Image (cartoon, rainbow, N blue to C red; front, side, top):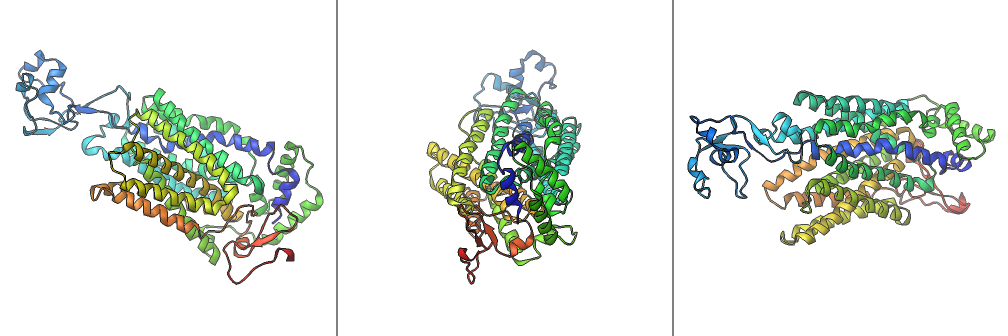
Length: 553
C-alpha cells in the first residue's frame, strides 16, 4: 500500500483537503434537516371536533362559539376540550353549571371534522389530511417510510459508489434529493407524499455515505479523525438550523422546500469536488488518479509526483488488481476475516443507531417550547463531538467506541432507578446519555471507513448504514413496549447499548494504521504508521500464535 506515501509527498492535509471539507459541508447540513423533519411537519397541534355546522333548531345561532363548544364537546381533566369526541346531544345545562361532570354522558366520534389550533403551525401533515385520532399513527408512518427509503438507498448507493465512483454517484444523489424533495412539497395526497418521501430518503443516503468517505480518502493517516469529527459538526449545525427554519416557516410545504434548497448550491459546487484518487487507483484508472493528485499537489504548493513514484504506484496497483472484477456485497462475507468484520460492525452499527434514536425519542423536554428544546438537544451534540475528537487520538478508536456505548448504557440504567419526581437529576443524566450516544455515532462513522478496504468500502458503509436504519426503525417499536411494562423499553435499550459496546471491543484498533486497499490487506497483517523510521505490523484481527518483531521490518 503506497497511497500514504503519495499523500506525504503532495501534503495529505492542506488547502486542497480543507476545500473538499467545505464543499461537502452544505449537503451534510441538509441531512439532519430531512432526517428530523418529521418532528415539525408531522406535529399534531391541539384540536377538537368542529361544531360550527351544528344547529339545533336555531338555538345555536344565539350562542357564541365558546358556548357552542361548551355544550358540544366534553372536557379533559386539564380543562381543555376532548380531541376526538363530542356529545351525542347538546348539553345546554352546562352553560349554567360548567362544573357538572360530563364523563358519563354519551359521546360520538367527530362527524364534521376537526378545528385545529394554528397558533404554532399554519399547517402540518395532520391538519392537511386530518391525520388525528384514529389516523394519528399515519403521521409517524411517514417517518418510517422515509427511513425505509434510506435503508434501500444504503444498499443501492453502496454498490453504485464502488462501481461508478464517488463523484458521479454524489451528483446523482443531489439530483434525486432535489427532485423528490421539492416534489413532496407539492403532493396532493397522503399516499403520493409517502412515496416521494421514500424516494427522497433513498437519494439522501448517497450524500450521507458518500461525503464522509470522499473527505476521509483524501487525507493522511494522522488527520483522519480531525476530518471525520469536524466534518460531522455539519450535522449538528444543520440540526440547530432546523429549529430556526421551523420557527420561521410554519407551513409544512414551505418548510420542506426551505430545507431542500441548499442542495441547489451543492449542485453548483459539485464540479470542484475531486474524485477519490484511492478509488481510481484501486480500479486501475491511473491516469485519472494522476490528474487529481497533480491538482492536489499544485493546490497545496507541492511538487508534482515524480515519475519513479508514479511508476511504482502503477506497478503495485497492477499487481494487486490484475483481474478486472467488480466487487459486490458478497465480497463482505466470502473470506473469514471479512466475514467477521462484517458481522461485528453490523452489530455495533445497529446498537449505536437504536440507542441514539431510542434516547432521542424518549427524553422528556425541558418545559420549553418544541423549537428551543430541539435546539438544545442539537447543541448538546457539539461538545460531545469535540470531546470525542480529543479522545480518539489519545486512547484510540476501539476504546472510544466501546466506552461511549457502555457509558450510554450506564446512564440509561441509572435513569431506570431514579424516581420520576427528581426530574432535574433525570434530565442531567439523560442529556449526558444523549451526548455519549452522539459521541458513539461520530466514532463509528470514522471507525468504519478505516476498517473496510478501499475496494469494498462503499459496500461496507452501505451495509452498515442499512443496519443503522434498521436500528432507527426498530427504536419507536421498542418504546411502544412501555404499555406492557413501563421500564421495559429502557431495559432493552440499555441492554442493546451494553452488548454492542462489548462487541466493539472485538474490533481491531485503527489509530495510525494505514487504510486497507484490498481484501488481502484485511486477511493479512497491515502496516502501522509510527513516528520513527521503523514500521511495525499488526493484524486486522488479533492473532494469538503469531507475533512480529518491529526490527525485522
